[in-house]
Each structure stands twice: as C-alpha cells, then as structure tokens.
Image (cartoon, rainbow, N blue to C red):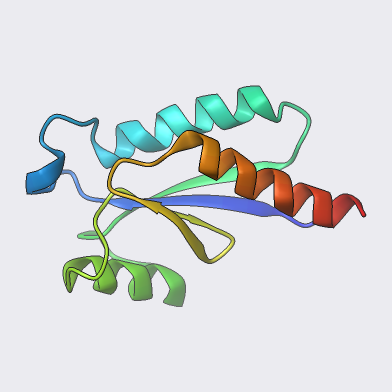
Length: 107
C-alpha cells in the first residue's frame, strides 16, 4: 500500500481573498475529518505546513516559496507532491484524486 500524504499549506493570517473562509489550519482539520470519514480503512496522513514557520523538507520549502511568490493561493492542498486545490478547496475533486491513487495501489 502506497502511503498517501495530504499536506495543507497556509498561514495564520488569512489571505486577502480568503477573509470569509476558514483558516488554512481549519481547512486541514475539515479535510481530515471529511476524507477520513470517506476512506475509514485507508492509511492516510495529514500535515499542516505554515509557510511562515521553519520548514522541514524540500517540498515544504518549494510550495511555501511558490505561495509567497504569489504563484499559488493558500490554503494549498498537495497530495503526494501534487497540487490538487488552492484557495477554497473543492472536496469532490480531492476525494476523486485520492480514489484514483487508491485504485492504482489496489490494482
């Protein structure tokens, strides 16, 4: 079974266009609850990466810098290194991507 890691990038301060939306951390918690409910028996890991904190991996540095350079909006949702949503994430498209990864793994 391939591990599936869902990383949500963001910052404590909301972006200007996201003022009426949940924070990036709240988005991570909401996604974790919704995805875990949809895939209760799968091994999924969830991470939150604050773009203003000390970063641990090359991937975190890369996506955080892209957000800071205005190439992406946050919250940015990355699954196994691939951007799947930004700004106001669309749950059905995220679930579809996870389903696709799980099908590839089970075949």
